[in-house]
Image (cartoon, rainbow, N blue to C red; front, side):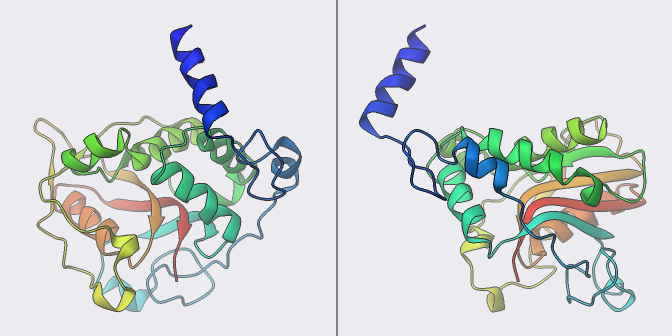
Length: 231
C-alpha cells in the first residue's frame, strides 16, 4: 500500500508523457505501443557489418571470440533511445513492460541458432549497481530466458570499474582492451553454450572480453543478445 502511494506521489510530481504522441500518463501509451513495429535490422556481422548472416564473419573470427549477435533494433532508433535513457539513466522501471512486450513480437528473428543455451549477462560493477539500483543487462537476461525457455544463471563478475562504453567515442574503443575487467564467479562450471546478454552492443569490446573469458573456461559457443546495436 505504501509503495503504491509513493508511486502515485511521484507520478503527480513528475507526470509521464508518451515519447511518441506526448499523451500524458505513460512513457509509451498503449496505442503507440500497439503500433510500434520497428523495421528489423539488417542481418550482418556485428563487428565489421558484412551482410548475410548474424554470425561473426570468417575474417573477424580471427580476432574476436563472440560467435554472433541477435538484437532488437539499431541504437539509432529515436524512440528506442528515449525509452532506454528513461530506463537506464533516469530509473523509470515502467519501460521494462514496453521492452518485454516488444521482444515477444520479435522472438522469431531473435532466437539464437544453437540450443540449449545457458543465459547469462554482462554485470555492472558493484559501485555502479548501487548507484543505479538495478542491472539492466540482468533484466535482459531474464527476458531472454523467458522468451526461449532457457535457464538463467550469473556466470561472471566485473572486477574493474570502467567508463561507460556507450559514452565513449567509437574510435577510442578497441577489441581486447577489456580482457582483464571480468572474472568467472567462484564455483561456476561454465556451460558449453552461452547466450550472453547486455542492453546495447556498441563496439563489441565488452561483450567480446566476456566471450573470451567464457571460452577460456570451457564454453564452445557464446552468442550475444541485446536490445540494440550501435554503428
